[in-house]
Length: 80
Image (spheres, helix red, strand yellow):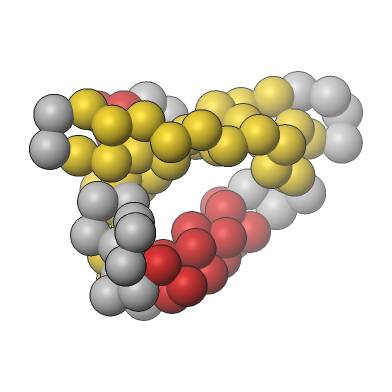
């Protein structure tokens, strides 16, 4: 797994998921969320294209009802 970048709190600090295939990229993204935000559940997902980059913005909810948006740079694998 090759994950670099920031903490995912905004587009400029997106978690960069480097993968060859879309299947691997999705798996790495889910693993990162599970390791960094245990107990949080993804509820919505939105693909955002900006300049030459493709981002996946995932809204997660904690069991307390608190929400958090996470940004992932999926440019290397989206659509492959």
